Length: 248
Image (cartoon, rainbow, N blue to C red; front, top):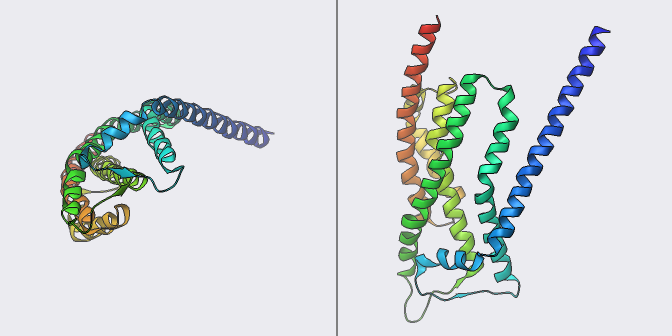
């Protein structure tokens, strides 16, 4: 009887978690849809804004639905950005009951500073890296060959660069959290520096557009972030050692 009761309680607990997860995902999805619909009414100013790095260049669309679908893509990206606080809050509400106090603090730290670092990476990409890379590529046009961008391809280029740099700037946060939990150590990262730098440039080659300039422009800041991650991990390692000494 006791075993059956325990199994029933466990099953009920599992399905309650599934129901809660479904509800959290529904709220996040509704927030994203609402944000996307709202952004669609402002998609033309958004399109004008992202075209600023190329100045007065004229764009083209190569098929009847291409421009409309590009606007939908822009609205969807804006909707995700607007809904991100709701999405993160739903994530927090779902995982919070199963975390210890220290794990909750680590998660809050990760969410807040992760958002800040992602925004910093995206901003750095849009205002520094993208204009530089566009100037580099456009210098090769001449009287015989003029640059003419497809708007859809341009949106894809901007999106991939912004997301790549935003994700790359998350590296110190991820390493700091893992070091705080004892999964990584600064000493181990320092010893693996050569392999880490190699992996960084391999990752940059995978996630950026297929040109060497974009790969180098992403790889170099990631190397700097990797060095910052080593310093943060060593700091977390020292704090963790002191905490364990006090607990002992």
